[in-house]
Length: 458
Image (cartoon, helix red, strand yellow):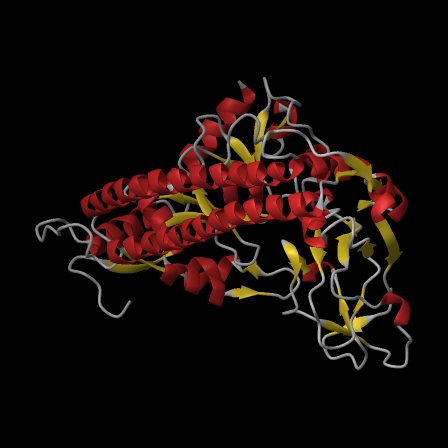
């Protein structure tokens, strides 16, 4: 920030908080605990996931016995402490510990105890500004696991500090604006849930005639003329061989050709794994059960193209079924349930075989009825997609508006200023004097320590 409002100061984190990082190795006592263990009489453990979601309900926390907690007092966290993640992409998710019951903070987060003269919620909102987020990102190091250095965080992250009473005014107005935004976001999320129901109803309409009569069912194998698995050859973005369709290319009933990879071995004969227009490709293997059975119809592709072994190619009798109708039907809720039930699991991977697909019973109306049902469903799905796009854009705008509110707040433009208020520099001088008189051992930290010990040992 090039110019601060009147009475403000630019401060480092350690000027206004007692800032500590805890690298508590959880070990078997934490990782093996169930949510229900020690809940009625234990001490809560605070993990990174609790910080990211601001989730501190009984069903969100794990607990450790009071006896174990007594040996973990150096890792205590108390109501009003600020917690921020030091790992992730990006790091810097922050929350305020809300419970009156002290807890034990685990690894990969930084605990800050604000000075009593500093509004903790003011600091929380400051950490959410784009400027502070950029500073935290700039001091994050590592590739596989990006981490924030405690010393860099304490000394290198700077926050604009308003006078004490102005902090409270800023916090009140920010939270009022956020409350309105939250109400709008909740309404948008409800709209998305309604759109899910609209899509499900549209897809269910593929299963029955206009008069509500269910279409007759047949086993998929009865109308299947050809079915096979794809190639397991290695592929890359710059491979010299044929393009190979993979799981990411199977999207919402259609083949997405924007992210193609190619067989590395250009001499390999992939004749047995080539696709043709009208083929239905189905995801057969994935770590997510919800992706098993997702289908798409191959369009007209100019160049010869193969498909990968995680997919199954179905070629149907064109006189019996429209491939687009089949792909849409497989997305209907009742068919999705059946496909997921048929999927076997091995070593964390779900798999559905061609043999099981052959036994799947699917509706088989006349081609005319298929065309009419598909046209009606596509019309409804198109409307749902359009509304969903508008909802997504509105959610994105709400995030931008949230950031703009914070930028304005911490630029001094959200609330009126009172030039008679004590400037932040005087407050900082008083905090520094208190620390000097206590030899650097913040009185706040000592008070919290006593509270936790009394709670754990009572």
